[in-house]
Amino acid sequence: MYNRILIANRGEIALRVIRACREMGIETVAVYSQADVDSMHVRLADQAFCIGPPRSSDSYLRIDQIISAAEVGAVDAIHPGYGFLSENAHFNEVCRSCEIDFIGPTPEAMEQLGDKNTARSIAVASGVPVVPGSDGLIEDDHDAIKIAEEIGYPVLIKATAGGGGKGMRVASDPSMLKTALNQARTEASAAFGNGGVYLEKFVERPRHIEVQVVADLHGNVVHFHERDCSVQRRHQKLIEEAPSSTLSAASREAICAAAVKMIRGANYTNAGTVEFIVDKDENFYFIEVNARIQVEHPVTEMITGVDLIKEQIRIASGQKLSRAQDQIPCIGAAIECRINAENPDRNFQPNPGRISGFFAPGGLGVRFDSHIYTGYTVPAYYDSMIGKLIVHRETRGEAIETMRRALRELQIEGICTTASFHERVLTHPEFIAGRCDTKFVDRELIPS
Image (cartoon, rainbow, N blue to C red; front, side, top):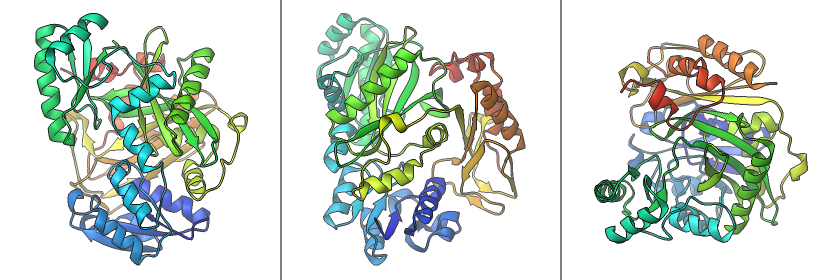
């Protein structure tokens, strides 16, 4: 087991990893930008190093600065968290070349799965269902039109690199397809340095279901059940729950088995998430693999009782999975709301600033993962998420009621947050009935 781990991240995920390490008797090293000098992860780590100015490109994305901190801190391993360099295969490789373990998959697996077109090919070879579409990247617009006619409109153009909805367009006829291809290539090239795109059949009103999978270095692979992440705004997840309230037992078993096959086919190790879209008839199709821990991992922890961060650390150090598939329960229902420093009434405009008052909700089944405190200033340089409110109860109905109560109890003064918007979602009849698709929020709750 490791003696000391560096966390190459900030905010609540850095704090989450520090807590897991502390319970395991592992010392921690934090890195921070000048904007994060007063962040809670800096205060609670055993050692901390400033790695640059506020902007991510000058600090949290500086591989050389992070490796220097790791060497000075004499760490055994680096946990990347999510975002920043967490899915950067080059960073992964640099860590290992410096004889520092990277708590995640191999660089080879990460690189393969980071390219959506290659990941799709692995899925096909592994017998995992994929959305009908092009066999590879689209090089010629005439080929795109031919493929679109074969699979039927509407079609979805997707960038092979990146995520977050960038480089993604929908086309419903040939003329729209040509324009959308150019737009998608331009956006993908600007965002990811890779303008490659491919084509898929557009599944209307899909649900977004993902499966948490963990694999060790000894060939063992297990799943930790599924999460429903359909409540999104512009492809960004807002609310996640586990398990899905809509999947039949047969579909649940099939989608989890497919996720395990995908991970085996990719020779993947450590924690990862296999993402699918599910249509109205419960046909499911592979989207991508997130080769890291996810923002929404707490809902899985709540229904299984397994600390996924500790599992990551144990596996990276060479230990076997802590339990077999039949030892992973699925108990009750969990919901997570991402609390962002944004103003929902002003098109979710980011609202950084000083928190003048803060009170975290509590009570049975309530958890608040956050790095904020009274007097903390939310920087303007990073993602706006400042916390995750998670509840776990015996039934989904009870979880919804507890989440409503917890959202009303949460007090964050001095800045605007999305807590009130989540209350609107949780009182909507479609959410209560479990009928949300990925366009539910944009269609029902945000004025056009």
